[in-house]
Length: 125
Image (tube, helix red, strand yellow):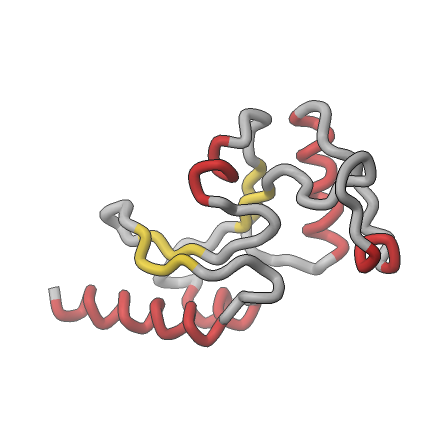
């Protein structure tokens, strides 16, 4: 993702949107999270969610701008964002690309193709 961000960031706005915990310690915890010491309870308030987002951004060396979803989880519910998803949204607000559930079904090559297609569409217009 960092490579795509670096390649397109002067022409496309990128954001990580941090949503509710998919595998909280007080919910459905998974072994890989335990092994990697990714241990967050389900956020009780916005400040906890913001703190977890900052921790992940720093710990994973994410340079993309990070937004933190409000506690109503409206983005997560509208986009089926948890645990992770890749979306490309055009200037007109329509979804140009909707990736599979991450991290297992992320396809950065598909996202790159969608970005190239969007750029070609803009050049033709």
